[in-house]
Length: 118
Image 1 (cartoon, one colour):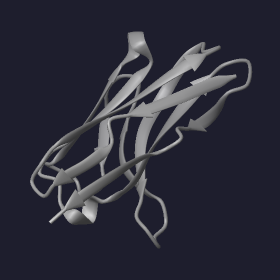
Image 2: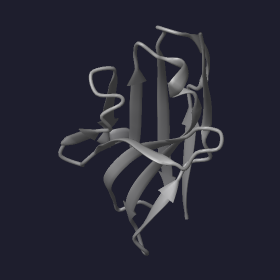
Image 3: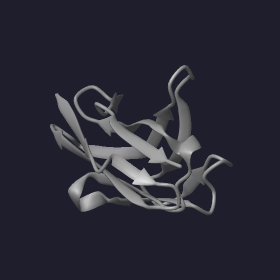
C-alpha cells in the first residue's frame, strides 16, 4: 500500500506565491513520473505539470513561466512552486505519482485547496 500526503495549500493574494509538497510512503520499489493536477469549481480536473524520474518537465500553457515542478527522489517527494498566482489558479490541487511496487499503478493525493484572492 502507498500513501500520498499533500501539504502547502492556502489562501494568498493575487501575485503571491505558494509551494505545494506531496510525499509518498509505503512499499515503493521506485517512483516514475510525478505530476500535479488541479480542479476548479465546476470544471474538470486538468494537468498542471509533470516531471519524470530523470527530471524532464512539462507544463500546461496557463502556468508556464510561473510554476516550477521539482522532485526529491531520495524523499519520494514532488514539489510545485507557484509564483505570480492569479484568481484563475484557484482550485483543489492533486498530486499524481506513478509507483512501482508489488503492483505498479498511479496514486492520487488527497488534494489541497489553493485560493487566490483578487
